[in-house]
Image (cartoon, rainbow over all chains, first blue to last red; front, side, top):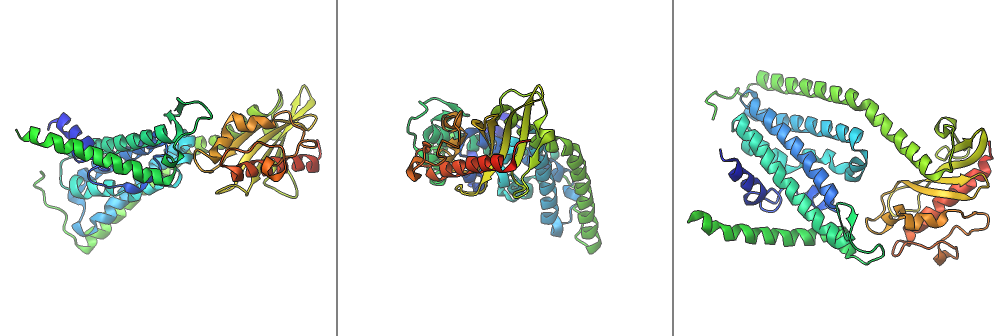
Length: 202
Length: 192
């Protein structure tokens, strides 16, 4: 298994947000700043990693007809563990992300990887898959959060680089800005990946 | 990859597996819950202490342990500060429902002459980039040193003396409302 190739798959080729268009709800809702995007991305990665690992370990013990309920119970447990841990140790971030932490349960990236990958592949492959898909999701959220924060608030990771009373394009930290910025980013990533395809074939 | 066959979906297997998974999950959750309980309880306490440090003049007592609430409104908490046994001021935990979304919470510190010493935002969910500017010193410092008896705690649009945040008059109004509520609590609650 080529780790670099896997990483490329998670970050660009099969990026959960830009290419597969999964997990749109947290993607649009919490990316008002780069920091929130990073927090949400890492929390989702932790859940994805945990769920992928456990599910690939017990995949042969799960009867087919109840596999979805079993997956959901496992995913929900990981989400609650992350939720409690964040409430205890990163209270400010936890408050800003609010309801979207518990909602990781219904993030289709996670159930999608459990159903399509972890329930069929080996432990190691699932671990790597969880990691690269999670990093891809984080990458997308940080990118979107950065674009919105730079344009909308004139800062990056909370550090302001324009004058305090300067006018910024507020639209971008408000909800419509999420859709606009995401649209442009998807177009941009598609252009990138399409260009690189013939080169790989050659 | 694995050549082992999956467990067949018989009624017994399904009940067994789901129950086992649920029990194990419950165990893991209860461990995490009790493990983080103390840290989660401390979060609120630390926030309050930080706010008290921010809004009160120098003090050497423990205002948090001497706090009391108004009989008329249990949500308003008063924290008396003392320096060498003498009253140094009072912090009031106050709120307003006039904000853009949910209730906003402030800590307002008064010195011993009932003048506003400093203000601090405890909790708010105003519009990012607009109402959230109430957290910035530029806005909340304009209250420092003002005596609410002589200073009209309203935004200029409403005939008061407070400079509202640009494009966030509603949030500014809510802030003034909360500070005003704190001042009335301070007068109504009497000094200890």
